[in-house]
Amino acid sequence: MLGVAPILPSRDLAETAAFYTRLGFTQAGLWPDEYLIVMRGEVGVHFFHSPGLDPRRSIAGCYLYVEDADALYAEYQRLGLPGEGIPRLHAPPEDTDYGLREFAVVDADGNLLRIGSRLAKPG
Image (cartoon, rainbow, N blue to C red):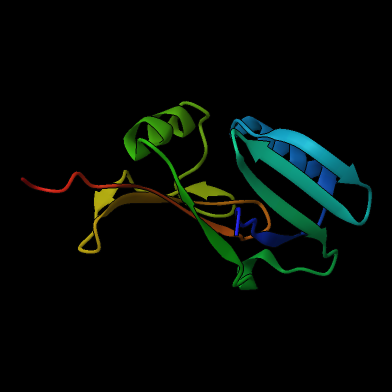
């Protein structure tokens, strides 16, 4: 295998493209009322059109691995994303017992993006 790309629902692909552009992604492809692909570096996230989606009931999400979760959180914090509601930027990154430092973003469609970097191994 060479990679993986999550495929998430979007009520409005143009609005989704605008939101992810704010997050530092570039639009790699848009097929109106069908499909959207955004990229940040080598990481791609795909979206399919789902006009009836209720963001409060969405169970879609993905995990994005980054070099430095703290730096990306600070970048996103400067965007002024709210800390509550949809969309939102969750609390600052925290260390987990499974070896990652992570935070989360919820986009306007209720998709959960967990974003984390690996903790340095002791020794």
